[in-house]
Amino acid sequence: MSYYAPSASRTRPGFSLLVVVYLVAGGIVAGTHHYWSQLHSLKQIASALLATVLWPLILLGVNLHIH
Image: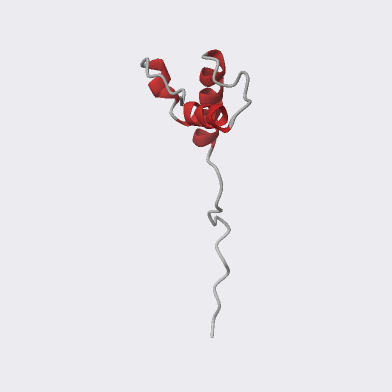
């Protein structure tokens, strides 16, 4: 019986560089639009996280503050 050596180029789970760059850009855009200032309630934290993930909508003028 012959055995094959495992492949050296296995994919591993994790974040790609593109996802990291997207989230960093989202954090910067959300920060410049004051989503990350004064996080005192759960609604404000949820708004900041939502703004970080959906940052292209902020650039289009959508208000993501949860009231």
